[in-house]
Image 1 (tube, helix red, strand yellow):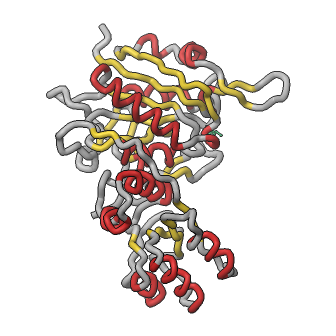
Image 2 (cartoon, protein in one colour; image 1 turned 120 degrees about the horizontal axis):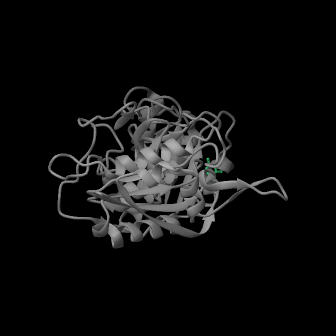
Image 3 (cartoon, helix red, strand yellow; image 1 turned 180 degrees about the vertical axis):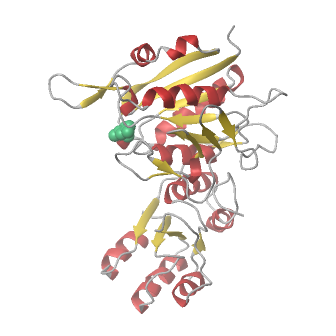
Length: 342
Ligand code: ASP
């Protein structure tokens, strides 16, 4: 008997691709062919309903409109399923999972993103195990019938990571994702061990879906040799409402006058400037060095240990909720969906 019901949303990515016999490139194929490659699914106690997006995409082409489509679909089918699995390309999976974690406020069911490095039809594919375990995790409940992981997460290579803490760090290894500032939510071995102290639970009050996204965000990665002209064109452009400044180490930037002047100019224009470290792990601390303090004094908000992927989704969502930049700045410092350490 099938005990749980899971909606598997197929958006594209390598997991469902096949090599084109004419030009040799990888192209998507449909979900029935994916299911046909994974015999384990027919033996599962989980009822699986597939939903295929049109068009199926290489996730390099993902747009916020697809996140809105996903969020609406999850809202509309929330009461009919125990959980959701999203098949997605790995390249931008961390961006999509991050954005959804802010869009699905009050989520009380699992939304598990997964994909693979090798297509599912290939003998050495990592897609089979990723798919089967992601479905098992999305369906897992405690003795009271509550979902074990009511979060937006990424399952990959035997580990379940919080979506808005994850980043793709390998283009080749099966172990493609890491979450350096947050322990895994679960580890899959012979059994799946859930890290219950880390898993977040919605406070109650129901699902509140935010689909109005303001995408006027620029990302400026600091590097030696940056010129004032290039920096000003990005940060002070009328098209930029917010800029994520990817700084060095613990949130440090150059202390040259022209640099601080441009930051002050953008700040005086009311722009939202968020300090996110280029380092894979660790946190921004603008009180540590004079080069960080200067940014703080110029009106830059600390991103703490947020990833760039999560910072982008958080800004899109908060800016879509309000035109008041002071409100957005205050919210950026709050931990909204487990994206920063407290
Ligand atoms: N380019 C692919 C994508 O992101 C890579 C993958 O799925 O692993 O859709």
